[in-house]
Amino acid sequence: MTRAFAAFLVITGVGAYAQSADKPEFEAASIRAAPPIIAAGATVGCRGGPGARDPGLFTCQYMSLSNLVTFAYRLDNYRLSAPDWMTPMLMFNISAKIPPNTTRGQFEVMLQNLLADRFKVSVHHENREVTQLSLVVAKNGPKFKEAVETPPPTNVDDHAGARAPYVPPALDKDGFPAFTGRPMSTFTNGRARLYEPRMTMQALATRLSRQLRAPVAEATGLTGQYEISLYWVTDAGLRATAPTDRGTDPQADVDAGPTLTRALQEQLGLRLESKKGQVDFLVVDQAEKAPTEN
Image (cartoon, rainbow, N blue to C red; front, side, top):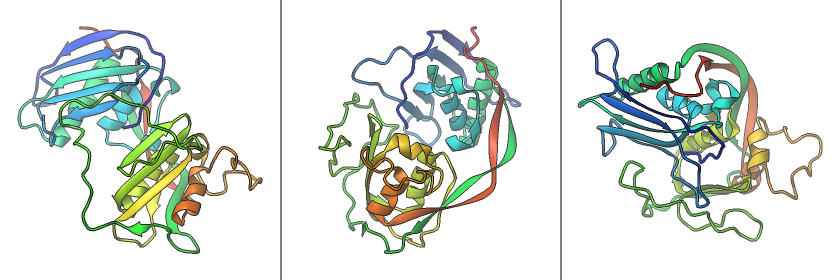
């Protein structure tokens, strides 16, 4: 999950919910405002639930209300239209007990109901015309290698045990997170590095979609798994919605480092083509900044 930092109010609330046939709910749920993040950082994200190692307990740490809504509705972040304060002005921790044999679909409805009950969240769907991107191979072909046959050891599943404390990554001579040879997706001081020893083009397109906050379709025609290494300036990259968004100056951002779109072409031999199209958005009509008390 993405790490987020913000100032927020300290508000606590604990709720108990009963499972009913017409309204799937958690057996019990606690929502608390997250405490201030200290110097070394904090664990951010959610774990547990159906399909996880602990299907009976769902917990989240340092999640904004917009994070929780996109999680509950299984939504890419660019498809959420919500008040600015939801991202990430206020952060919350959640602990919820899940009834036995709950399916993934039922769990998501439980979380949606929890947000509606405690934060008074109401939403509707709406089609909007936005820029859509296609990931394609650049003129001179890809610049990355196919993955090795034997995959390297992977990190422990997010749902397993306690996570290690966050340790800021070392930086290389240019100020980007240093390459370690292990899978990584790291953001530090507006600069990022992605390394995956075995990655499909579809997985890369999904990552790009999250970073650019725009739909990215995989259209490279490359069907294998590949070793992907990429670094870029996040502030410029997050502003990019098309390959030409850097303006008329071809040297823009050269001193700071490559934008994400420029890094794709220079480092991977890939590029993004843009067009307009209709995308389904989830619009938040109403939400409260503090959860209701019990």
